Amino acid sequence: MQTVSLADLCCEEASIEPDALAEEWRDLEQWATNTVFLSWQWIGVWLSVFQPRAKLLRVKHGNRLVGMGIVVRSTERRHSVFLSRCLYLHQTGLESEDQIWIEYNGFLAGRGYEFAVAVACLDHLKRRERDWDEFVIGAADEIYVQSLSEAAGLFSHIRWEAPCFGIDLTSLRSGGQSYLESLSGNSRHQIRRSLRLYEQLGEVELHRPKTLEEAELVWGSIAPYHLARWGDKPGESGFANPDFVRFHQNLIRSNWKNGGVDLIVLKAGEEIIAIFYNFLYRNRVYFYLAGIRSESDNRLKPGMLGHALCVEDYLERGFDFYDFMGGEERYKRQLGVRHQYLVRAGLQRDRWKFRAERAARTIKNRWELM
Figure (tube, helix red, strand yellow):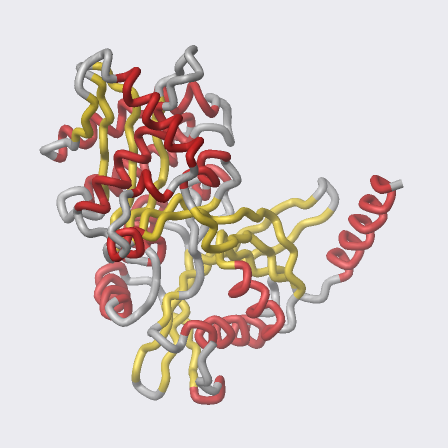
């Protein structure tokens, strides 16, 4: 937390003019500590694909722009009983569009201004915009959200939560340790055994597309694996959602050539056993999703093997961190170390409907414990 006084900051609203915003956002990004999800690499595609009716918040310290955020107004029905008028940060409030699942969300802010910018924006919204009930933010760092809720005098209702796991490649490199050496004996055994079995099909190698056209084909070839694993109904695999597919097609077209997107195919001989779709930003790897071949032989661990080989590859190429991001999946615990906790929350104003909702939730929880 920084010591910037809120009295020194001025928050203002502005309309979104894409070209001007792109320049301002990239300039601010240069001295911010944001992740890929608050980069123009992500935000610019989000705006161009979904074109939300959004409001831009700009925070200045004197004449210097120190923070920005994009807010979208939406209404959602809760428990089929009441409506909540929501302000969404860098999301639209539409389930099909928000399935792209932004993580490490928050306001874009210059280094040292992160918390003050967020509080200034919420303070502005509370004073100038009275017709909203809750500010929806996430997935974002738990401490950031809770601190913001307390500072703004809002009740934090957690809608989703999960730990984040990752691998500190810089630490491995400085210690002269291979990735496999850092794992438990059981995990090393599973990965090495899987490698030996797959080598019976031929050489096990990582392949990357050489052209944008090839990258788009690789992206599309993930779909059957992902649909088989997660399901083809709404809210299951993103590949069943045209909005999800459209967003990522545009993200790849905008960012593959500049190195912001990485697609990796793991092959054993001529057979594809896994495909990984990652984001690269500021020397950090963000694992987003994968298509993993289903195997009847439980000795074969294509996902674990693929991640291990990708990590070793990124380690050799000088990257700093391999981030599995939010999720409770077992393989993340096996292959990484917890480094953060994410939540998605509605920061609620004092409304009778929310007090009634909390009372009903308390009664239900007590009943379930009886």
